[in-house]
Image (tube, rainbow, N blue to C red; front, side, top):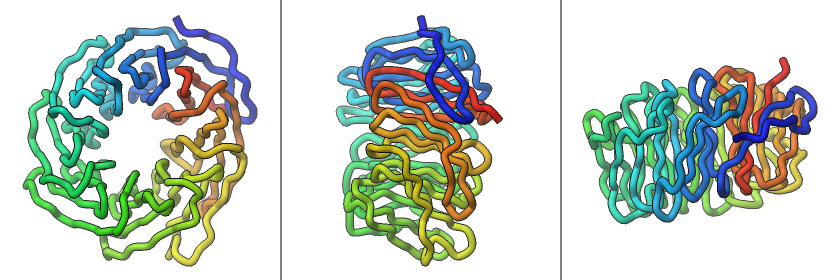
Length: 347
């Protein structure tokens, strides 16, 4: 059973419910209608919570030998994919809690998963390859061997996939099995996010910088000065703002006009330890940030990247993931000791 109780909060965050998973919580994912919140732990435990009450619909443990690495829920909110250190991908029914398909990629770690925007395809990585499968688990595309482990993947549209690895970002036409575009960089790229229109690709680098390219012009820029590797990146729905971690401060770059080149980023200072998760609301310039100090903060931003906190809460452990409900009226967070927390958003 979930522990239904009030949570301490300020500003626009209203009391919600808390529950838990059995180990370090890896991720939280909402179904499209907000009726289900999926939470997973690193040892392979999965729980499906009722989005409003916190009651448990179903749960499953030890789904992947040696541990879970990635999760993704499809846009319809009906299928939930997991992958792990055992090289397996499992596709679950969100409603029934049953594994519908299982895919084995071999002996490597299956580290990344993401559904296409139409929900017809699931992209995954294992070691130096990227793969695309249909909903039945049939392989429909496989990349060539990358120069290193594929660190991140993202769909730029329903038939085009981007991959990041050591020294490069590559874009592939999945339908025609064609390499469309490649951007090269001298270092290891550890994270990646695309703007909603697919034109800007931003990557966190091993050298504590953020590098980005504009696909339409092939122009590139670098934003340095981070204390740590920027592993957390997110664009707002319009592609105007790019939020980045890499320190205790959330740094927000504005792509408005000719930016961000030649502009100063917004600096959101309130966390006392490094940022561990970032997520923009489905609409508008509200940003949720979670940090290793256990704080969750909601920021109201301007188009220049500056902004103010409008809500804050504290959980009892490091925040590992935050996620907005698709309607923007609730927020979930999970932590390093397995805590699962939700808040309602006051308008």
